[in-house]
Image (cartoon, rainbow, N blue to C red; front, side, top):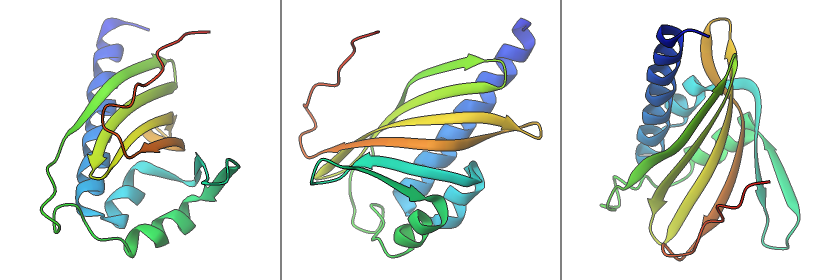
Length: 138
């Protein structure tokens, strides 16, 4: 992959992440839908410790019923931690907050018909903004 393609991919993936952050701050399901592939899903660990996989349409329905952090006057703090691109595959790690909840999301992305789309969101939520995130590598 040449440098121009890499630069273009990084710009596109940063824009995708920014759209994602804006959607989260506004709890805008339609804006979220614009960056997710229609067959994607959201995965997390439930309160009982079990893995929960939610199809994107069900997750978007839940988003529509949530109060927006903007409306609640919550401080916005979001950032891209890493972007790793390998051809038509990318992993975008992001962190953001909706106090008292703090999120770390791994957004698995594929280039679908020339555009980057999230095909899987794996999320971690904590109520302690200082909770350490593991940085171990396999």
